[in-house]
Structures are given as C-alpha cells and as structure tokens.
Image (cartoon, rainbow, N blue to C red; front, side):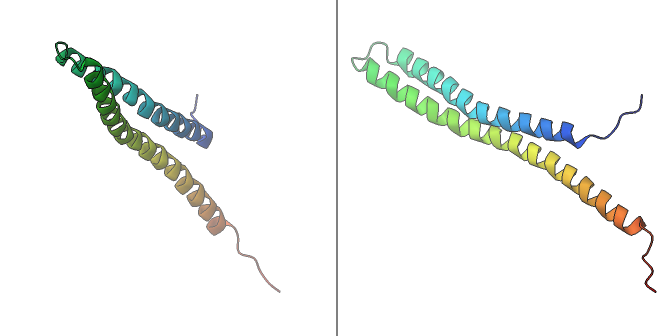
Length: 108
C-alpha cells in the first residue's frame, strides 16, 4: 500500500493544534487558581485573614497559570503555522513545476 500525500490531513492536524492551544490557556489558569488558593490557604491557616489570603493566592496563581498557558499555546500555534506553511510551499512548488513543464505555446 502506497501512502499518498494529502494536505487535508496536515490542515486537520493544524486545527487540532489550535484547539489544544486555546484549551491550554484555560486549563493552566484553572490549575494555577487551584494551586495558588491551596498554597496560600494552607500557609495562612492560623491567620485571621485566611479568606483574603486564599483569594489573593487564587488570583496570583491564575495569573501565573495564564502566563504559562500563553507560552505553551504559542508553541502549539507556531507548530500549526509551520505545518500550514509547508502545505503552502508544496502547493506553490507543484504549481510552479506544472507551469515550467508545460510545452511552450507556439505563435504563428
């Protein structure tokens, strides 16, 4: 069985990478929120302002999570763009090859 080139598969892969990139920011923010709230909540267990510190920890954790998520999302978006660029290069190369291999037109 010979494997055939199919640009649709690469486009589907790029779409999946973009979906993953959009989900990872949200997931990282939620994880940061949970970890931040838990860390400062436990650290301030004996403090009278326990709720305030827990909320501050949740906010800081979410912001850090968003920052980390954006960095990871950028990597996925870049990979998607590289794949799409390769598809476009192949398409342009195929088109240019077809034009140069066509027989010349004679004018009488």
